[in-house]
Image (cartoon, rainbow, N blue to C red; front, side, top):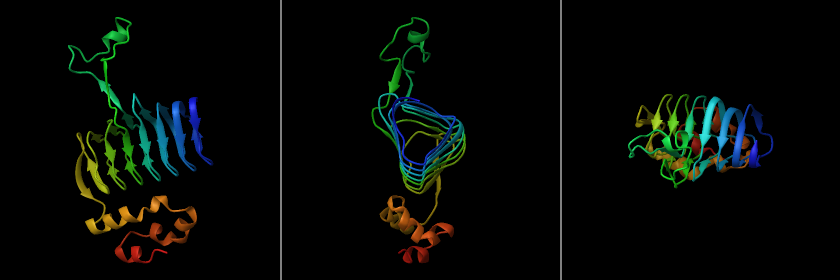
Length: 205
C-alpha cells in the first residue's frame, strides 16, 4: 500500500493493492482488489474480488455504508479520447510523451450511495450517482445515474424494476438506517432478518 491510507478499525484485508488518498470506515471487507486514486469508503462495505478495480483520474470515488461489490467489477473515472484520429494511447506508448488530451477525465465525483449491490462483471463509468438501495445486475455497463432502490441491468444499463413500492422507498430514504448506530441496528434486528413490509417499518424502535 502506498500513499495516504487511512483504514477504519476491524477491516478484513487480503490481497489488496492500494495507491493514493484512500479512506475507509470500520468493519469493511477487501479481498483481491485494486484501489487507485482518491477514494472514500463507508463502514461495513464489502469489495470482494478477485479482479475488482477502482481507479480514479482527477476526481473522486465515494462509496457509502453497507455496500456489496462483487468480483470482476471495473469502476473508473476516465476514458480514452475517441474524438482524435486514434483512441489508442499513442502519445504515451509510441511518442513517449504525456499529452493532456489523450485521456478524458470526469471531474464530478462518482458516488455510490448506501446499501448498493453491484454484481459480478459490471463496468461503472465516472461522474454518475448510484442511489441508495440500488442493485446493478451482473454484466451491466452503467453509463448514467441510477435511481434509489432501482434494479438496473444490461449494456448500457437500464432500469428494469424497483425493489419496493414508491411509498416504501420514500420511507426508507427518510429512515436512513445505514446511518444508525450499531446498537440501534441490533435493537431492530427483526427488520433485517425478515422480508420487508410496511408493518415491520411501523415497529421500528
